[in-house]
Length: 176
Image 1 (tube, rainbow, N blue to C red):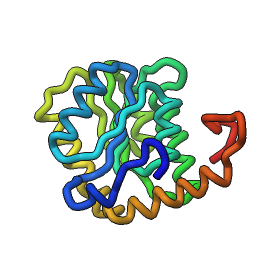
Image 2: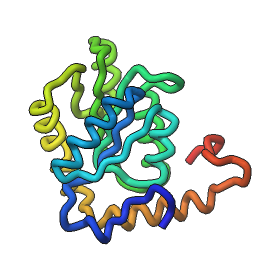
Image 3: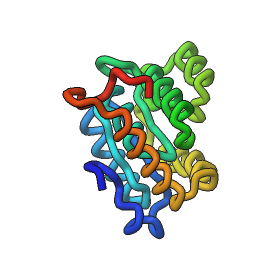
Image 4: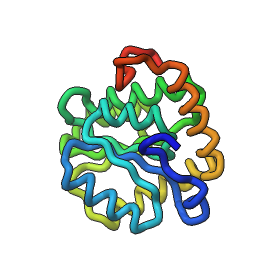
């Protein structure tokens, strides 16, 4: 099993879905990871858009929660890159939720154009957060059942092996 991959066989019966939280605030990502895991989700975190894209290329997530304002690559561009990769690679389709302290009509419009299903302005209370996650993840797990995720991750692993270039640890130079 590749480094960072989720052991699906051990968790398939108990997990509610696979989530990726992309945010540059380490306290928030730790808190959200803890709260979501307590609810039965499998959660991975990324500290910026580049790391989020890398993780989305190495494993399937039902739902991606992404901040907008981050150093390097903003959240909306990150979401767009992940969507383009998933479409080209044919490895399922994640849902997306924006979590941000920078709520504006323009951001909401851009997020809507990308197909983002929810927009959570920070700060948010935990009860609302849990409800939004559950509301969004249930149809995504129905569309891509937990058992199917293992097959998608195997496909991703094969793609990464084919496109792996020596001395290029993040493979950021590839379209896929």
